[in-house]
Image (cartoon, rainbow, N blue to C red; front, top):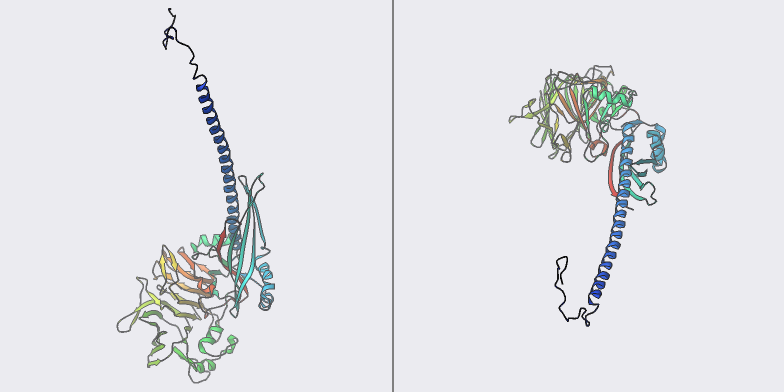
Length: 532
């Protein structure tokens, strides 16, 4: 038989049966079985895909909820920080409320917050962004109070709770943050206030003042609040050093008028007459040991230096040279005067009262022969670790070289103070100690000072300006600056706050505010819970 097309398989042989009888339907069963197997696998894959899609969708929603909740915490923390920054570092409070707080801290604390900062707690924030929404509630409560005499150190607990969600979705995710606020209230130690200018300015004027004068502020390690400018037309800076003089002289002075020439002469070991005190340097002796140092007349040069385990202070006056060297670790003091050398088995009180001007103040080095010279070409630690010095002058103080604390370490332009226990406070009152006559006062960086001058000190000028003379200088202050005005003359100023004063790590012997103030000096995060 012929075919019109080619065959792929040969024809059945003649006489053969076309369908095998014993294997009929076997292929159909195999095909049916494979169909069932692959159908089951397909249905299983469809089911697994649906489960996977649902799980991924829930993960996606969960991630969005986490993001919303976390955004709420971050925004709440930032909102709180911005609010605290805008209120300034030193807000006035009433004396009556301060005394009420002394009697009942827990009950009066909310009133204290409200008077100083306004109705800020509880603080509610609601926001929406890109389909996400969050609601943040910030609360603050009293944790501990430390009475430090004229002021309180307050530790307040901070809690920020955030509820995050998505539009058209009912579930919410709640996260919380635990933090702390460091607060000072009362007549604060001025070194705890980083920058204070006795001039009334608005918040925008504050920013313009800093920019125009080339002033930059650096925050401390772990503190979310950066140092701020406190500008006030009120007389916050004290105009006298009565309390410090009384402490140094070991006598009772309740008002500046209480200090007569006869009382001062008696404290200095001179005959108690009304004659003026001769120019010179006097080491105060008390019943318990040694008091502070009193200088009558202008000091042409005052040099601080370290010699082994001893702190050296040299006073050069027209009347002669005086040198004080003391070792706190050995409780040994040597006082050299034009009349001879005296030795004592005590360390003096670190308060130096100068009834006159200091025409050149700076750090130096002690030579092998004991001679102390000022150093301007390099940074030399000049205040011994563990020593606290307060220098009070009734007239102008001129800074001529670096004043560096031993143990302070700088890294990437940031100071680290953990290894230092020393402090330096410099205070110009602008008033004669005895007559209370107004003097020029003020603190100035001399034209011949180093261009990269470092001052590890709290500087206070009552009733006068802080000036930087010359040009091309960058003055770095680790501590604080308080003055009636500022004259930078185009020079730059970088200020890093020394938070040891606010935290209570360092002692007193510094000027205190003339009126009660409220200051939030730190905002720190303690713990963060992503889910609750």
